Image (cartoon, rainbow, N blue to C red; front, side, top):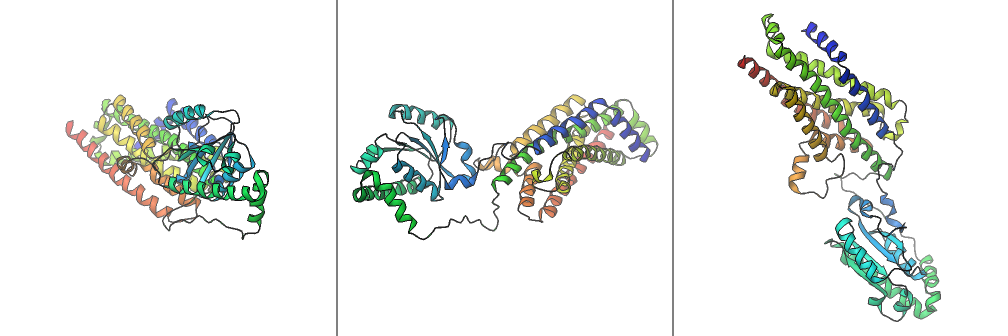
Length: 416
């Protein structure tokens, strides 16, 4: 068996295609992991306490919908102290993310058209249009003329938003009656300075994990890296499977059986070769990460390589099983690529699946990458139980993989 393992490893490393992917994919993955925080597009949850300024009315606000936040898109034609106060108080409440576009020359018809487009191509909880004469109309008690509110979702927090707007408008009008339109905002801010300072705390349940903005970016990078490295591991297992198919066609497997080597022993020998290929891919990734600061990964290099290696073993063994079961190079390649693409998509490596249906979430729970992303979050928050959790996942998949591979080899032997 040792001779078979050594000869298979030599054949594997003589394959130029294997060497090409052995270097290329880990390099791409390490570049993604080494990107500066924020490069993957995750937006800050801490912006919930201040008004986010956008320059273009068409720029999407869906990216601020982090952790299920209630996003409010505001078209501010007033650009007054009163509108500043209103939006600052809404954002400062900690319940909403307020995204403002200053649009002094926009009309209500233009806003309506943009809202219609946003309803189809963007995502937010509500939208608001503040007219050019916002302060004057509030002073006259014409609240409905001062602004227009748009319901953009069925989120029940809209009622809270609408109630807060009414309270703030009443507060602004009272201050205007006391100090006039020009002095109302100063009066309100003076009163607030005399009030006790309010501290907003975001609570999480015992089973929930709240990541910082930096960790959200790092998790996004890890998701893309998992997806790309999964392809490398799937291909490494496929290359090993190709040797099985070739040896079967060349009657090498039959001659090996004459030496007393069982089908199960042959499969385990190829599984060892698959382990070596996974270790090689992971080693190249480890070398590539040496060119980047480990702080960018959100974890030590050891933990990063631990995650990648065990994820790789799962997918490499799955690819090996496909080669055994299919017995055809082209069919094995197609199935391997299908498993890689669908598993990465359903595991949430490209985008979160929080708002998907029950069926998609159930399918996601079967994908290995999903559990390794969970392990990534656990590492970020210092939860050391990620090791037994991932080992259990790894062992479960390996038991299934070895069982399928053994059955496949016996089936092939029976066919002969």
